[in-house]
Length: 244
Length: 244
DNA sequence: TAGACAAACTGGTTTAAACCAATAACATAC
DNA sequence: GTATGTTATTGGTTTAAACCAGTTTGTCTA
Image 1: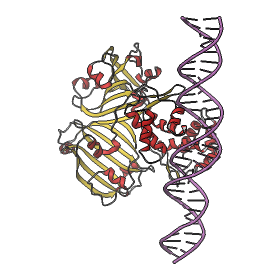
Image 2: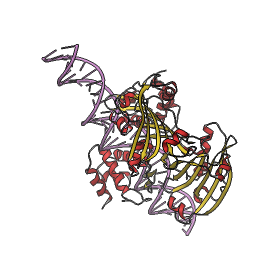
Image 3: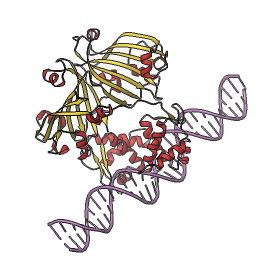
Image 4: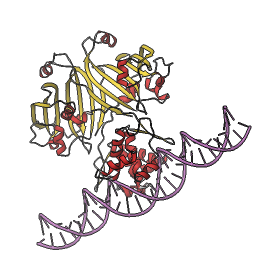
């Protein structure tokens, strides 16, 4: 199958803006290995012509592919396909989706789910007005019937609704109210489990746990999630990716 | 000071492509709080006119600001300034730059620096050809005179040069040879220090340590760094950011 | 054969001009 | 007073055209 033909076919099979279809088609075709890593793509002018797209639109798509690390552009020379790099799970997907991707069925046991007013420490950390109505959610997270983590999340009530009972995915719930975090700041460190935590996770007191503090920001820059999670060090690995 | 005047002034004070100057100027002026968070920017057409820039160029800049979370665009409505979100240190900056940013002078004690051929396990992990010449570097990382981490890095010899003795920043060295990683995959978990590690870090055996496995990919998608680092859990926090 | 040079080609930048779709503001009718 | 359309405005998409600055490549010379 010809490269151009493959791209054109996939483009025709989709809806939406031209540039978006182009981008998806290019990603898919390159992912299928139509052009070997290290090989060059045709020149922008030629591709634009063959794909019946303006160079501007083509370049927009190539720019995104370059940002994703699929191709690399070298001024004056050309655009080359980069070797496959394994995909990383980002924590932004949340525990529920994370575990499903690993083939485990995630469950939760709600230990606390209460509505109150935000205290001074959390207000300082999040920048929310002192006394704002918040929902505090403490959950034991399990996968395959085994306790993996203990999570303590504080969320503004309006981001999740006053009727939330803690069951189901917090992120999916926030999604429905258009309040899912767009950016997340995380701080990870290793600590030792105290008596209470060890009892919940079924591990020995003093065993290593991965402590993840997380601040989620919504579209407007306000904090929509302030969470702390303790993962069993022997059962959980955090995988992330950094681009530079 | 007028918003437009401030942007124009900063634009004039720089060199380089118009779009780049525009972007930097906008970032700087917005960072200085010229427009309060929540407030709207002027419309794209007006700004382009006032700043003597085409709307295309202006939009390119705004797109980047939006990706960085400085502004948020809403079709039909306008572009609003987002509240400040704290900056995250990314591990891509490397231990040396990381510690300098925190005001500590980083030092290293080289425990091993040898050239050999890659073994089966590392070859599988990195995808490098079996038997490739590699440099193995084991360093104790200190900040402010205190041991913070033990690092074991495996790097292709051509990425760093056969004459590297382990002193100085590995990333700066790779930079000079244009082999700095562009993307990094990391896997973090919490473990307990064994006898040897505890002795190196000056902690109690069994104490919690943050174990970071890291694969760095160069521009062409080949692995240029395969490292494992153990950080003292009580002295190091890993801060990262995720966009979605 | 080795080097110097020029021409062709590559991606990068910038502009102007249309048009679309979603929103906000306003005027109108009930 | 409220509901309903209409209209102007906003960001989003797409195109075509020109020019710049590097990289190849090929040719021509010493």
